Length: 494
Length: 114
Image (cartoon, rainbow over all chains, first blue to last red; front, side, top):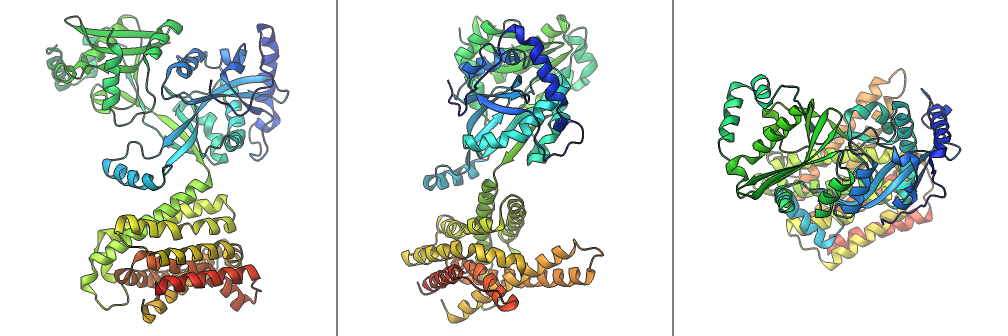
């Protein structure tokens, strides 16, 4: 089981406690500090506690945490048991002021590579930096939500979800500090939660868009009817042309996984087996064969009036020639229409064919909060890169102004302008740091540029930094650390 | 490093610190009501002007000298602030600050000659 810093002292259990929990929910929702326009600095009456999976045995609030969602508590347990990489899974008990557990929010800790998904050039530079500094742009991150899917707030009513969100917003950072994480992310919450999660903004979180899911209205009599009414003539013709072409399921999934440039969770054989066993009411598997050989499969989940196409596996030896993706889409939609489903939902990525098929985007949000030290590190890195670019700009235009004091000719270089832009971004980043850190501390820590810039010059400009120069840099660094506090005070008064 | 380049490096940092302080004064003045526009515009323009001078001086220096050598002079910023408070506001400079400024001075000298 994953390691959890704090353990529960008491977890509610037993069906006889239903009425007590209902009262607790009412208390949490009606707590004075949670109502209406309460002062955001006043902590909500609820408390938050971190526990492990074993502590949830018999916890009624956990059993019905996501009862209204297609991925209920069974799915979270399944993900913890089967998904790779093995994240550190933990659970946040949201309690009222009397200590009764009202809701449970799952979370996990992941060692996040901030440069994942960037281009080959950036990855190459990052690899060089990581030879010296292995943790460069890697952050221990606490993620709220589901490791394999979008996130949801626990509870069945909007009031409880809003109250839970307020407790999480006010208390989560404190737990994150104890867990030693630098970044908190609310992973992929649907737009319907925006009102409930708006309170996170007051606690330093920023909402940023994630890659959206897609949703297609399949309220049609048949797949042909859908094509006739939803698609243009040319799209229909193209799709029909593709349809003229036409236990090894897991390797097919691996093929799709390995082709993707953006990877997060990796399914296991065990995941596929267990999903069918533990959630037979929700899981649906579709398999396509050619001459007896499995060439495609799709894992779907059904809930309410929607079918969710969760994961796809394709044999790429034939997939592109046979347009297998479109076959899987047609067959799943036909199956869903025949059973009266209204919506076909799909995960992010591979947007081009989906938009041609008239899918609509279904926004997902990330709510992100990080420590000021990360922002400070960002400023330092940006300054180092900016200085390298300015130096390159000055050097490539040097022929035009041999003896001039001012280096105005450098403005002709794109590198100079890129350096200026990065300096502007680092300035904004620095302003953000000053909102969260004392000036004296920020002043001292910013002296790290004295190390970062020569290192950047060494790595990217090929400058030779002699031992004497390093000694001088070390003296300057030590001097700045000593003079930082009086200098910051002087700066405030001047 | 030539004496002229050394003077330019120090001058560069003086201009940078002065420009930043003037900009800060201009920004702070925007919080006062009624807004002292003369001070805002005057300090703002002077600040931007000085920062422009710093920027082009810096580019000129970067053209001729190693970045790893020049950047050490950025370390002169904090001592200049402390000395500015001492000179303009008559504030006492504590021993710790003197030691820090001494170390920075030694470091800059070492890099200049090394």
